[in-house]
Amino acid sequence: MLLFVGLGNPGPEHAGNRHNVGFMAADEIVRRHSFGPWRSRFHGRLSEGSLAGEKVLVLKPQTYMNESGRAVGEAVRFHRLAPSQVVVFHDELDLVAGKVRVKLGGGTAGHNGLRSLDAHIGPDFKRVRIGIGHPGDKRRVVDYVLRDFPKSARDWLAPLLEAIAEAAPLLARGDDAAFMSKVALLTRKQEPTPARAKGAHAKRREAPGEAEAAADEPAPSALGTALRTLLGRRRRRGDGGDGV
Image (tube, rainbow, N blue to C red; front, side):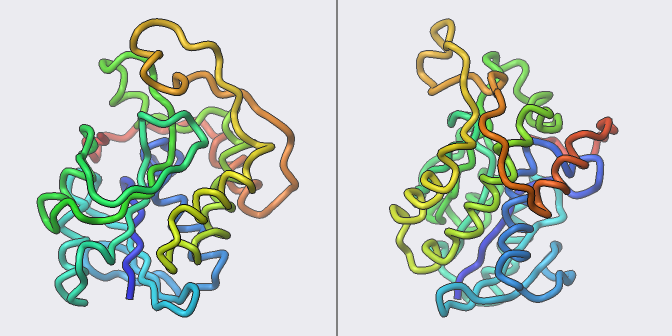
């Protein structure tokens, strides 16, 4: 059994935030692979299904980002899972928008969701790092992650989430390299085009996150239509979670 965890903040005011891309990935995996209906469990929303012959639980904690570990810890203890059986999908500032990387264990890099998981189950869980880029100034990080993806992201975000869902069975098999390769192949035409990096801060990253330009127009899809509607609405600010 595996536990897939999407990180984000609950509530409609956060639904389109960059910080909620983990929730978006979880939703698309459940939809694409016809998992069971969402139900309330472990201080979160839980869906069950299978990938590559492996039973998989998908959990979206409803405790706000900085308490995500409380929900995940309950699920891990109830099902007697090892941390290595937990796969966490989360936003990553230190990756250019649209890139995906997988790693086992590691630090938290200031991400409060990862810090909470570390406190409750230890650091040895698998992370699917979904790049959202960086605003270029650490003082802008909180506002940046708690804002919706810009309209310019809609042409690459939907194909990226669809690719993550399509390649998810490879994660269930433990073939992380094949998962990353498949996501990269499926999203090659839709990758955002970064602007030229400026300054010392930009040099240590692939590109600043604000430099997101639309690439080729993807084929219409239900997810793409939904994201266009979500990203096109005027964002209603909320103050529920700490966000980082």
